[in-house]
Amino acid sequence: MYSSNSLFKTRISAHLLDAFVSEGEKVTVEGWLTFYDEKEMTWKPLDGLLTFYLNGREIGKAKAQYGLFSFTFPSPSVGKHKIEIKFKKEGYESSYKSLFFEVVEKRKKERVSRVARLIFFLILFLCFILFLSIFLSKLFLRS
Image 1 (cartoon, rainbow, N blue to C red):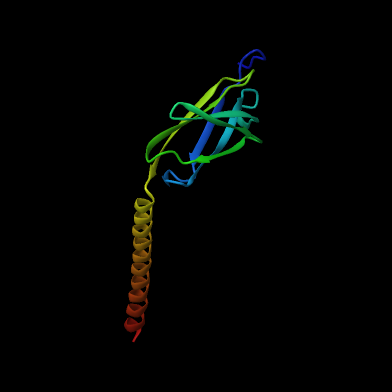
Image 2: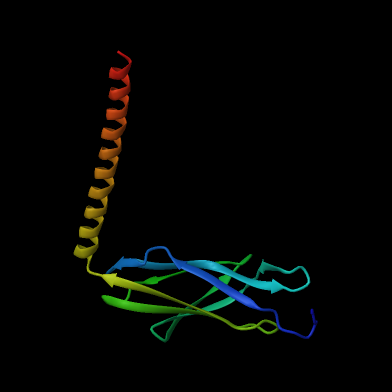
């Protein structure tokens, strides 16, 4: 039942652009802030101020416009970290979202990138060989 005195439910959906950050890089969190409209029974974008915490310490605020927000900050020390996003506004229920990410040494990230590129090119090469073998087998079967 819809009541004009009730608080609107809110929801924060967020993701990290890169959950495997190396030291010295920027960390970016993007997401959506929405509220549930009980009359129309749908989630709608919400404008509001979000507060960001890194390992329990406030590091800044970002404004959601048309429900969308983005927040960038310098990477912390090497290791695993937790970022929390909190929203509080009169007339709306508070919401909370946690994300985890890891900061690694530059060398480790470069190594992982090289291995990923190698695997990508290996898969691409195998697809080419498969395509070529199918093409050649059909060509010789017709003869």
